[in-house]
Every structure is written in C-alpha cells, then in structure tokens.
Length: 74
Image (spheres, helix red, strand yellow):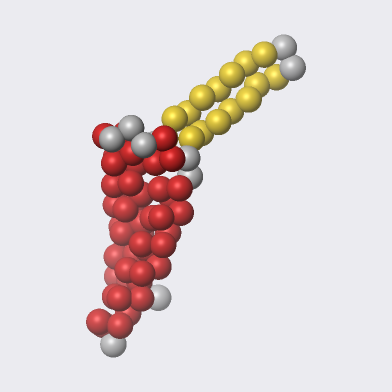
C-alpha cells in the first residue's frame, strides 16, 4: 500500500463514518448517533459513548473503496 492508496482509503473511512453519524443525528436514529454519557455515583463512574455502528459501516466502506481503488489502478 502506497501513500496515495492510504490517503484514499483513510479519507473514505472518515467521510463515511461522519456521514453515517450525521444521518443518525439528522433523522434521530439511535443506532447511528454519537451520544457521550458519563454518570458519576458513589462507586465510581460509568461511561457510554453511543453507537459504534457508523464506525463499523465506515470500515466496510473503507475496505470496499480500497478494493475498487486497487482494481482500477492495476
């Protein structure tokens, strides 16, 4: 993997993940939303960051983009 290929796949990951999180917030879809919650109590704290589904979908898009880019390039 060269630098140009890395830039294409990494930017597709960032773009797709941001797009899925934006769609989740725009249409209020809980499994596509980023909702950081920190709760403190006497025993400690509990942290919940929200859905990781957009990140997983972004990784899938990144993989597909890399395969397409490599196929077109060679």
